[in-house]
Amino acid sequence: MISFLRERLQGIVAFSFLGIVALTFAFLGLPTFTQSFNTNDYAQIGKYSISQSEYFRTKAQVEQNLRSQFGEGINFSDPAIIDIVSNLTNNSIIEKYTLINLVDDLKVEVPAKYVETELSKLEAFQVDGKFSQDLFKNYLINFNLSKEDLMEDFESDLKLNLAVSLIDATSSSFNKSINQYLDLLTERRSVTFVELNTDNVTKEFELSDESLMSFYDSNIETFSIPEARSYLLLDLNKPEMTLEVTEEEIQDAYNLFLENLPVPEKRISHIMVIRDNYENVDDYTNKVSRIANELSSVEFAQLVEELSDDLGTADTGGDLGFTNGEVFPLEFEQVISSLALGQTSEAIEFENNTHFLKVTELKGSENNSFEDKKAELLSELQQIKFEDKVAQVSSNITFSDYTFEEVYDFAETNNLEIRDIKGIQADTLPFDFENSNAVLETGINNWSSPLQIGFDNYSFVYVYDITEKAYKSFEDVKSEVEENLLNEKKSEYLNEVFASSEALELDEMMISELFELDNFKVESFKGINRSTSLLSNDIVGKVFNNSDLGVVKKEITNTGLLIYVVEDRIKGDSNSVSEEDRLAILEESKRTNLQLAFNDLREKYGFDDKISISNQFANQNL
Image (spheres, rainbow, N blue to C red):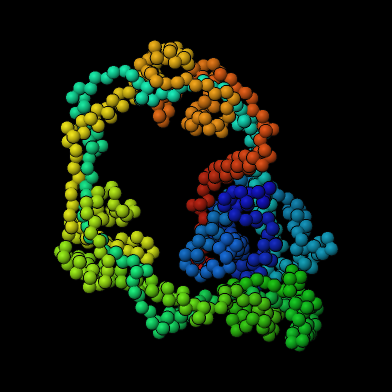
């Protein structure tokens, strides 16, 4: 069920908090050495305090999700990416505690004994299917946690699971009536109907000159002639321009590229010797010396398996994940910065324990040789020169008082293409909405602002003539006015037919006798379903939403008037729906109902406006 939520809810419960230990080992390995992660005042959301370790664990999963979606090359030092990660992390925290608060509102208590029992079942603490006190103790030491800290964190995850189950059960109530819904969906109907429009109206209407003139005045914009403009178009098209780039410029760009490369991330494994595991100092120092002596002759992974006291990473070669230089405590990062791929550090004393660190993988250190980057740098430099040219042209012509002839001289001097566009109406300008507005805002004998046509194409417009908006005279459009007014009158008559209380039968002669209508046809379709192509979607919706049999109905449609009667309803068969379609309908309904239920909760608790980061950390680069 929790996997259904993660997969289907478009962001609700961005990731499961249920596997707290697994997530910590997988994503948090490095920061666990610092005591500051034990504080519970990193952030506040409503009445809940968020520890630094919980916040960073959430952030780590967000970053992992982004890597999965956009690739390992995503730059988490980019200010824009930092903002995105921060917003997604806050959103995940908000979602989690919205659900936990539901359980707390219901005053559901999770017994401590139950928390202990469930915690002991986690695979991270199992050896041969049994709970291991040593694994549990080493985990707490490795992550600087007390048993109470871990139980509190795990209890919140149990509450989260319970809240999700409650909402899921509530939103799934639709399942009980799914067969009834499918029966309606597959129902077939026999229907007799007639579609009427203004062409079927035969009533005569007297159109006086006064009514025609009134209609003309009321709809004057219908008979307008839009403003027209004539302009010179100066076009800067990058592919058609000669943009020379020297070898020296490319080399300078390459050097700048190297200077701004993000620091490669290093994957670290460790061997850990825990002082508290030894009865005396000699045993402890002997263990450290033995490891130091064997590092040059024994595989690191083998030493991890045989000698490391960190049982939580013994099966993974001591793997702690990646660091970009900001994850480990400073004492570790200083050593790691000097290690190359495959190198192992000397013994590092930290918080009464000893560590040996090894770089096992580099990420972000791809081959960026000059030859590999040359073509890309050339293209970027040409783009810069192109944009400089656009800026130069813009600077030369902005606020300049050019004559028509001087525009041609400027284009010739700068080897630019120019075209004369005559009498283009405002509503047919060959630009997008924004550029068209820029042209329309440009006064006569003036230049427009730069118009970005594409990534490598800019244009400037010099307006030299404007024909003001005008209106066609009544005499010139009198016949058009007559036609429009007549159609309006006929539409009004169809509305009168719709409002009429006359008893109707779907018979062509009877309808013609009752109303001034002709040239229509009453049709009958037998056993049609909702997916029929015989009727428009508008009509299908009206016909299948009517539950009455044998009753003549009238409905206004997009094209006129529909008169119909449902002659027969043939019960649908839910068994005729494929299992694939049935599951799709179930999932869609469940997803919609679950999203609505969660949205109501989120709005009720309002945690979006109640989350805050401690001032101590507000400016910290997370």
